[in-house]
Length: 295
Image 1 (spheres, rainbow, N blue to C red):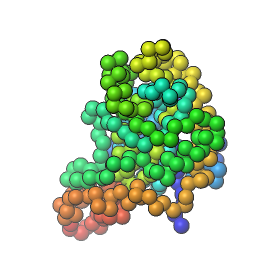
Image 2: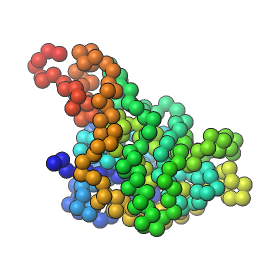
Image 3: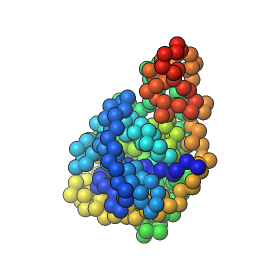
Image 4: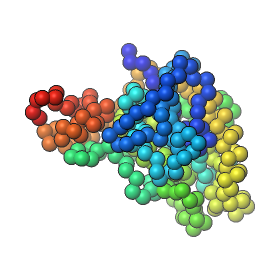
């Protein structure tokens, strides 16, 4: 049986995972450049975990500059089957209070020009993304959040903006008319790429503020955000410990076969370099020709 391997992508406030044993630091090169940092590989509660700080150690990388393709490609190359993303978000609804945990079920993409697919350089693929998170992982995250004492919202729509600036009042008011629940800057294209890589993905989103729409609340303050982040980070780590033990050994969700009918380009027209570069992702469907043979 294939070993269960869980990836954790830490967002603002979560730059390391305490309690990992048999730790290795793995620096990877990918066809898409360098990931945000070295991957930390170890065991937590007896389960193999691959941790990566999304913004790099010390929070050096702004949202628009995160190399999402390299990050997800690296996770895939290391054998990760599940990714738990951790994110700080703004609440867009009165019922979601700062400090609450949200497990988003939908995304709206308002980013601008971020590379959001592995398929280029002579190859086209169209994954299904109607339901963008893994239902199995999301359900387990929800239950774990409740058990560690968080106020958890099981579903909701996450609108992803470019950043790094927070919204204007006009933008925040507009987004609320779209009935979104939280606003953030990083889960897209992360979720799209995880689906392309056939990795189950879901996210723990912690509300740190009310964006700037709430007339009775103060405008977004980085100081207050950091205070709530410190509290939320502890909660996230406790929840993750529970989640990794409860994930099934075998995946039977749609995420695990997302590419089965998604790749459109005829195999004979796909450049050999593209096949080789994408082998960790497409290898179970399309193989590069052995060296020395003609395509």
